[in-house]
Structure formats: C-alpha cells, structure tokens
Image (cartoon, rainbow, N blue to C red; front, side, top):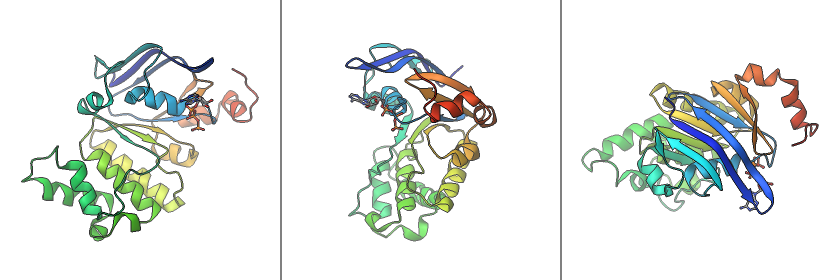
Length: 238
Ligand SMILES: Nc1ncnc2c1ncn2[C@@H]1O[C@H](COP(=O)(O)OP(=O)(O)OP(=O)(O)O)[C@@H](O)[C@H]1O
C-alpha cells in the first residue's frame, strides 16, 4: 500500500513538457526528498499533488483515493498539508495567535490551549509565544509555519525547500524536528537543494530532470551515480 502514488502524470505549459509520465510512489512513514536542477519540474510536481495545477493526463492517488481532480481543500481534508517556502504567517499577530488561527477550526476549543502549548514546545518557540511573528528570526518563522502546517495532524506533509535561507544550525535543527514528526508517524516529502540536509533526513531520494524521474535510491546511491552528477553540470540532455 502506498500513501501517495502518481501514475503517468503529465503537465504541459504551452509546448513545454514540464512533467512527463511521472510514476512516483511514497510508502507510509517514509521521509523522501525530491531533488533536481533548476527548472526540473519539482515545484510543478508539488502543485499537481496539491491540486493547484491540474494535470493534462495521468492519475494521483492519496491513501488509495483518486484525487487527480479534487480541489485543494478536499485534499487537505483527507490529510495532506504543505509548508511553502515563503512563510504564510501573520506578522502583526503573536506567535501563539498564529497557531490559534491555524488550529481553531480543527481542534476542540477546550483542548486548544493545551494543544498549542504542546506545539510551541515542539517547535522550540514556547519562550517566544507572545512575540510578534514578524519579529522572529528567519528560521523561527519557518518553524512557526511548520507548526501551522502540522497543527491539522496531516498524514502527509509536503515541504518546499524548508531550509532555504537558514543558517547551518537552523537547518540541522529543522532536520531533527522533521525526524521527530516522522517518528510519530507522519510521512514527509520535501523538495530540497541542500544535500547535507537531504542526507540528514531522507530515507529515499528521487531526482527529477526535465520533468522525468531520472534516478531514485538512497542518498548514497544517488551521490555515487555519475549520471546524476552530470545533470547538475548540464551534461545530460532531455
Ligand atoms: N505557470 C507556468 N507557466 C509556464 N511555464 C511554467 C509555469 N510554471 C513553471 N513553468 C516552467 O516549467 C519548468 C519547470 O519549473 P518548476 O518551477 O516546476 O521547476 P523546479 O524544478 O521547481 O525549479 P527550481 O528548482 O528552480 O524551483 C520551468 O521551465 C518553468 O519556467
């Protein structure tokens, strides 16, 4: 059984084949990273999974349900959540208020304060809960956004370059945070460029190149593959 599966997923923009026949499957409990050179189609593949783009052909299955044409909110209701690269936090509100907004329609109001305390602790933001979110460091803003995305207790969390712009310490702390989520049963799929981070978290890695699955394996298999090194140097054509 797979938690997410795409079958021959295709997306074109004009004449450009951005996603070409992508067959991809995620096992429940897996931490998977999607890598590939700029323009490989990673963001487009993410947006197809989320329902922000509709494919020209192919299928997307989530927990064995066909969600190919489902609206984004329907996918979220089924247990999909996403953390985008640009934080969607409310800068003029406190850290705690941001979490209240994210959780209030999904958690029993009597349990809300306790649930938020637990999240703040998990994110390492308990001491900053009264601060305005706009005053947090870049890394803390990303963690708050992760908190808002996991407050709904998704089965699958998608992360778009979760460590972009972070210091090495923040990047490492983010990796450990994601590993704890995974240990609690959440499946994770991250688009990521930082290979040290990929090594820290990924069970398996998929390389996209010109919209196609170019290679798949453990990080050791991927980094030892001379064909993968060549696509980053621009030596392998579509
Ligand atoms: N809405 C769109 N309309 C037209 N072309 C698009 C659109 N979105 C993406 N593209 C093109 O599709 C290709 C793949 O883009 P995509 O953003 O999916 O790649 P990526 O692997 O995420 O790249 P990066 O690592 O730079 O973020 C690019 O050539 C891009 O210009």
